[in-house]
Structures are given as C-alpha cells and as structure tokens.
Image 1 (cartoon, rainbow, N blue to C red):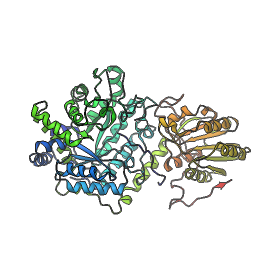
Image 2: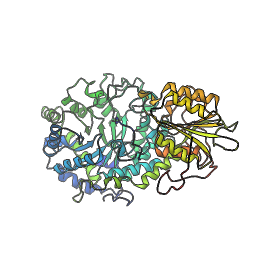
Image 3: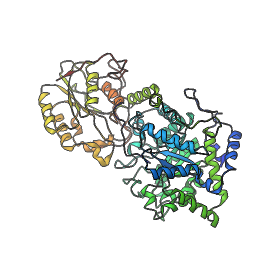
Image 4: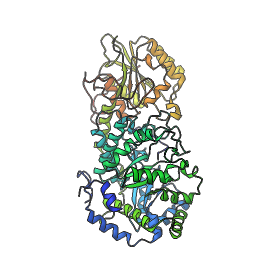
Length: 613
C-alpha cells in the first residue's frame, strides 16, 4: 500500500509465530528501553481465553483488518461499528486523515470492541505517511540507502515503533524490501532502500529489529518483489516477466534474509508472475506463490498478510466478485485479509466454504490463533492495557526531540555529492577568497531563506529567492542581476518524488538554468530524487551536484553545510541515476569550517544575517 500525499508541510500457529518473533520477557513503557515480550505460557493462556468464546463467524472476522477514516459517511461508519461490535473484526488500519479526528474515531471503534483489536498502519517513514500535516516525516527509505551504516536505520525503526505505540498502533506494514531497479516504478520508487540487494536486505533487517525492540510487529513487503515494475498495482496488475533464477537471486533475496532474521509478517503483492504461476492469477490469491513458495519452499512460519484487497490489481484484475476475493486469498494461504471491500458478505462466503468442506476448521483455527498470539505478544490482550489514545496534547507528545535529532543525523550522513570539479576553485567546499558568491533559491522561498541564512554564516553570499510561481522572465532577471558574480549556488527546493509527475521539473526553466551554468560557474543543490537527473540533460554544466533526496528542513540544513564545508559529504548513491551507478559518490571526508547544529530561527539559534539583493 501507499498514500497519495507525500510531504509533511514545512513545519515542520502459536509456536510458529513465537519462533518468528524475538523473545525478550511485560509491556513497553515509553523511554524504558526494549519492549519485553511475554512468556510463551502467558501468550498461550491469553489466546485460549479469547479463542474458546469465538463463534465460527467471529473467528473469520478475527483474521480481517478493515480501514477507517474519520471523514467516512454515516452509512460507512455504521457498517464499521457493526463489524467491530457484532462481527468482532480482528483489526483496524487508519487511512489518510487528520490526526485528532482519526484518533477520536479509533477510540470510538475500540470502545465497541468486545475482543481487543490489532491496530495497524502503513508508516514506512513514520506516522507522517498518514498524518502529514501534524507529524514530521522520517526520511524515506531511498535516503536511508545513501547511508553507509545500518545503525541509524535501526534507530529509525526503533523510534518509528515508539511513535506507533504512542498512537496505540501495534503493527507497521514496513519495511518495504522491494529492490527498486526500475526508475519509472510509480508504486515503490523512493519507498525502497535502492537497488543494492545486500543493502536492501541489511537495512530491512535493521528497520524490522528496531521496530521489534519498540514492541511493534513489522511486515516485509511486497512479496515476491514489486521493484522492477512500471505499473502501479493500486490501479492495474503489473507483470513480472523474469525467470525463476532471476526472481530467486534478486527480487526474493531480501525476503530470504528477513525470514530467518525473525520478521513477524510478510505482505504478498498483487502481481502477475508467469514464472511462479503460469495461470496469471494475482500473486496475493495464488496458492503456488503464497503457500507453495513463501510458506513451503522458503519456510516462512509467521503471518502472511495480503496487500490491500481493494486495490485494482486484485479487485478488478482477478475477475472475482468483491465478496469472493478474501476467500481466494484465504485458499491461497493468507493468514490476514487486509482491507476486504464487501466485509460482511465476505465473512459469509468463507463461512459457506467451511460448510461445503472447501476449507477446514483446523485451517481457520490455526489462523485465528496466530492473530490472537500476535495480539497477546504485543500486549493488547493484557487486562490492564488501554487501547485509547489520550487526545489532549497528542501532537506535543508525538513530536519528540529525539525523533527530530535523528532526522537531522540521517540528513547529515546521507548528503551525496555526485560530482565535484574544484580544479578552478569553483567546486566544493566553496571558498570566498577573491570571489563574489550568490545563492539562488529556485522555488520554495522558506527553504531558500534558511539556506541563505546558513550561507552567510560562512561568508558574504548574496541571496535571491524565487517563488513557486516563478517565470522564465524572473530567472532571466536573476541571471542579469548576478552577471558579475564569480560563483552561483542554485538551490532546487521545490521537488516531487514521483516519476509520473516529472519530478515537478519545468523543462524550459531547468534548461535555462543549465545553459546559465555553462557560462557562469554554478553548483547545484537538488533536494529531491536522484532519478530526476534524467529530466536535467545539462546537469554536467554544473561544477558540482549535491543530492539532498527530499525538500525538507533537515536536508536543506545539511546540504548547505556540505556546500560550505561545515560537514563532510559521505552519502552514496542508492540507485543508478542517469550516468551514475549505484554506490557512486564523491566523498568529502573532512570538515573545513564550523558546523552548526540548530535550525535557523530555532530557540537555540542566535545567528541570523543574510544579505538580500
């Protein structure tokens, strides 16, 4: 799954399951270190206490997770209430929403539950993936792929887990361990650690273990690999045309690493993979793929979860009625049915299949006990556990300094210099002797102003800020005003991660900028996707190119200090981009000037002086 919005606004079987989870010993207390898992005996006791009171229909409902949104209409909310109170649905997943209304609605649904529900979330870069206006984002996984160590990756997994637990959520559908080796991939792309399978596997394990230590179950996705597609499974059914050897050694490699490492869940994608199932059946409802490959051949003993069953890749491309799709996924071998569309009728269809003998009660019981064991291990079956989010002051509690500090650390350690020609003194780090230096903030004046402020802490840097509705005429005017400057720093500050949106690049304006760079020394600071280089054909006209991965305050702050030598540049390219290969970068290992640690305008910041012209 994914989300349509992508930026935080600027401010800003029981034994089998136990085998797959790391055992440590009662409930997670915030800031108290590693979550302590309960004993196997306690888990079994709690599972039995719930399992024995469930009817057949309630058992079926237990293995389903439904979505909710505070903006849902009355009929939809009434249906959700009925599913929770009457059917005893197993869990919830919030969709795109505002934080306070979402938590209020989640509290309402939890109050109706007679069996505690598992609350899950798609939070690959933290809860910001759902609550982008209230909670700052951790970096996307592609930026993590620029790091050279997994220690910060583990820390991010841990802090994301703490964030989820604060919001009373116990499952995060992360990490995404797809290998993104297709730049045009509209569904995965920057959600991936990159195209180095070893790094994808290693960093996937780090995220997973971090979340696990925070008391949150992770879900490796999207099995058997969604990285080399140019079709979005939300909208259609992508075809993966590769032979088994390629799939086994590349796409499935990270899954083969995370399974023995103890990942709690694996999410199965909606893909057409002829080499694995010649029938063309979507992988999420394919028994050869779910049971034959994942369960039997790869030996995964944990929970298998479908990707959302309302996605067109299965909802439309399977040819099945909505109420039949959950049964198809069940028969394929799935343990948890995520976001079925026609829930009540789907429960009935599975119930009827049991009566006809198409599926067995033993198989259902095994799935239900897995779900209940997961709940028990994550503490939500404990008598003293409260599923309710305290609404007062929630934003202050969820935006914590250690999260913000980590975002800054990751930014600093991931800044990537793709090339740097300093032979004539116009590269990195910028020097001022005998030079007149200027900075142009191309769009997003907020980030532009902050960059200009930082620049002027190192030397005199004249600053021009161009608004988001900048015209070619305004660029020409900036060029005329700066014609006597020796070096220009061009900040590309308003970007988009999505290839189908052209990375928000205005080709005419960017071509003007690169033509300008051919005549006047210019350093590019691009706060966006590495893949955007394909939309900047004249990029070699720059004397240096700093890649900042996304346009947020932490990356802008880190990139500015790389430009002026306040911090080293040690990031590496996580994917192949234009003429640059995965793993390439120009490492600048030393710091040449003072490093600043506090954002411009923060309470700790006392140095504010830019020269605007």
